[in-house]
Amino acid sequence: GDSVTQMEGPVTLSEEAFLTINCTYTATGYPSLFWYVQYPGEGLQLLLKATKADDKGSNKGFEATYRKETTSFHLEKGSVQVSDSAVYFCALNHAGNMLTFGGGTRLMVKP
Amino acid sequence: DAGVIQSPRHEVTEMGQEVTLRCKPISGHNSLFWYRQTMMRGLELLIYFNNNVPIDDSGMPEDRFSAKMPNASFSTLKIQPSEPRDSAVYFCASTGPPGRITEAFFGQGTRLTVV
Image (cartoon, rainbow over all chains, first blue to last red; front, side, top):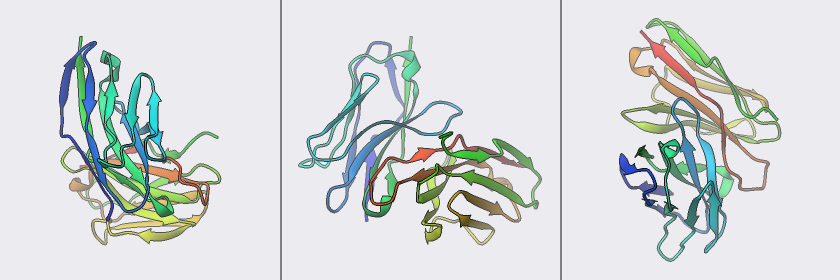
């Protein structure tokens, strides 16, 4: 079956540092890939998505590129802010609208 | 659209009591998911409906948990009897419309505390 593997956290960075959160997946066919963010006390919300190979999703300075050859969708941001502190989930959506989530990675950004 | 609406936002109940969580998905969405989130186990899928029909309930922890979707605009998750280990945040999410792969939209969650 489908699966998503994320790097374990927490990831602790200083403000303005470069961020990478790794995500790899296992799936048949061509799933759509997503990154969700969960701020404290809130539900998950979509951060960005990519629907086919080599697509790049971007939002709020975050980027991720759908790499089919490495089955990866790593999340990056050039300069993190304290307000980016949250839990980030990688996910894929396959046939039938069934979402599969990774375990989540907590990011803590210190001033 | 107001998004996915869950109620109540917070619930505190005594062990042994029945608890009912409610969800209204986004209009036009045909898939609905119930998740449970805890520090220990992270985000767990409990059950998944497609067109109001339960498709996968393998994540429902035990018979004390039940979920229904009587129509396209309403779903419930019931725990009877509740236990302290059921304390968690329960999320509802919906996707759609039919035939398109879209992102899931999550509600704000219900924080359940069983004492």
